Length: 82
Image (cartoon, rainbow, N blue to C red):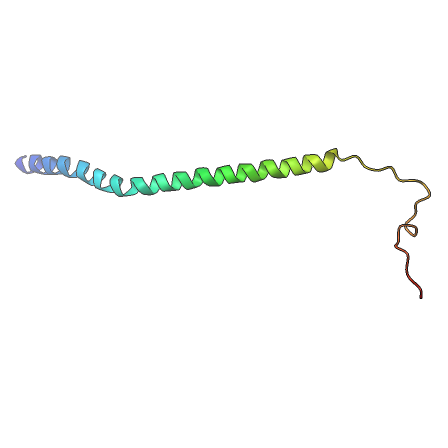
């Protein structure tokens, strides 16, 4: 029984120290990763909004009506025969 109490006391002292030792080095890295993730999210959202605005501008551009007399042959550029 005496041995179990001694081990329990040692374990009760070791556990908090181990947890603190594991937590302290990782905290700055977690903060850095969170900051990078927020920056990447902001950039992705900005690019998404930009692309959405471009697509909206293209879709809202009116199309010109084509005349019935316009054919594919009339659309070719004239050639210079000299």
